Image (cartoon, rainbow, N blue to C red):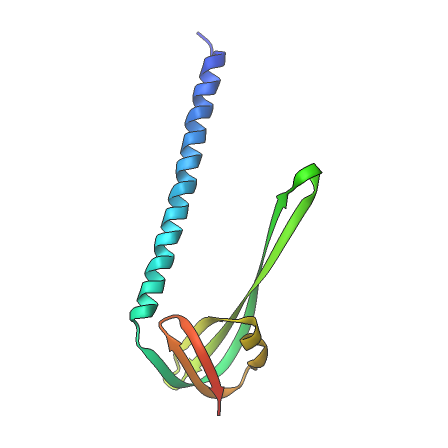
Length: 125
């Protein structure tokens, strides 16, 4: 007995369902992690400590998708990160807004304000 036409559709249905469930699970796990981090930041104390800017980096993400009439669209976004070193020697990398990123220079000394992993500001001394 060989594989019939119906067997192909059964396999397609199973694979489609598995991929759909995997995508939904990935979405749920990502959302739960984001909510946990947000809650952890909200419950963390707001701290202001002496710190030095030791590194800066960006992350550019590109998304391409098709549009009507075969036109392709690309969306690009940039995330900005700054690494600070505190007096104890510990380092932390925080996500900052683009305008803040542009104002900070490696080697700047000042007072870093943060709450958990949330950047609140940096005042040069």
